[in-house]
Image (cartoon, rainbow, N blue to C red; front, side, top):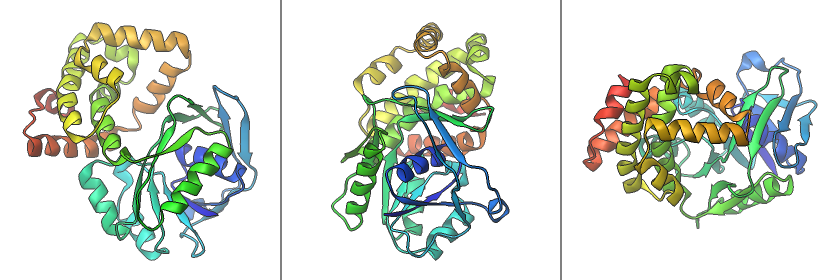
Length: 304
């Protein structure tokens, strides 16, 4: 199967390298200025098999190849702009699998660009670019990436994508409810992500009682909205219902002991680079709150 990965950041590279290892023909759609780059795409799993995988000579293209069977969209929510619209509308009419966090309004916009041939995915891995240019990532068998299962044209290609990822030992499975589960989980986690970003890291956030309290209160408010949007795992619901600055400190402490690199990843991933995405998602979450009659005053203060 020929797959085009639109977005050659760390997330797109991890999925693209795994697909190539499974025998798929992968192209990475990049900006014209990056077509002449020659460095290999190298990924290193930090748990599980801990293998290092690579594509020595990635195929970089500026347009979606006409013989592509499936598009894997791996850009941030704030990057769903006119450039992405042009690429999708000028390319072949094929399934688009979105790894991007999509709230309802953004999903509707994306489906307008793809003739509704869009499948929602929910990546369940954490990835970041290491200092030596190697993309490091964590993936857990107990929490596989979810890919939407739908009774529409193109579903066979998405099923084949899941099979390929599993063949390359990246946990993945099909899901009937990921279209609702993805935005619900995004909304539930969003306030804590914003609080970490506003502080510049986990420890600065925890060291700021006012910010930590505001983030915890915003998370409790957002949970009410999230549960109206879609299903959420019960442990997450229970954790967010009682979240406080003290429980946040305990959670990050436990995670840091189990996965020593995890808090560093959170700092590098959420500390600064997602601020533009936070603005886009925050505006849509507030609009969803108004539409569903859920007040989000703490989140508004957090975003202000």
